[in-house]
Length: 169
Image 1 (tube, helix red, strand yellow):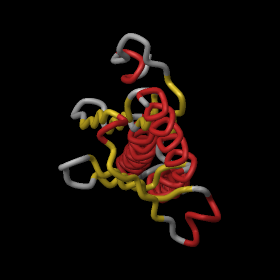
Image 2 (cartoon, rainbow, N blue to C red):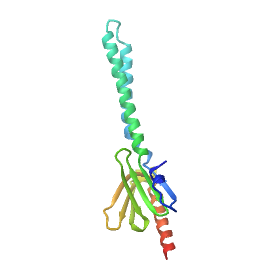
Image 3 (cartoon, rainbow, N blue to C red):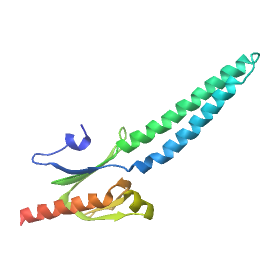
Image 4 (cartoon, rainbow, N blue to C red):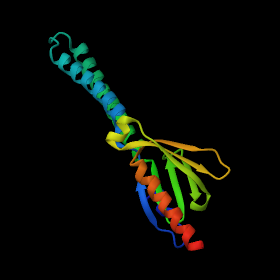
């Protein structure tokens, strides 16, 4: 169960959810591949050692396995960081949760959203990611980078604000 689902209030429903774009995994995957290829190189090198070099053979195997473990750690960490970020629009609030163990959350009532902006680079426009900037009334802007489908997120927030204002009129 997601953070938002656990913290919904009576009559509140989830309208839209998004998270970090897959592009945030490129760095961890490239680092993981670098370490994994180094591990493969060390394992291949260990196979080429002669019979009288058993100490060197074992050391290369251990070192190669260690490089594989580090590669796995980089990739798993990247996936966990991506999956630990939730951005949700409900019919009453905007939620943003970042992190798992150390968590940062923003829960903003739709009536308190002053403005919501989107910044996209050329690459972001092509691949569908960007930064979302949320301004609450009287608060500082909150910037969230590398969000998947930022324009759709903004549209959903604006639609919910419009619906909540038309109900109260």
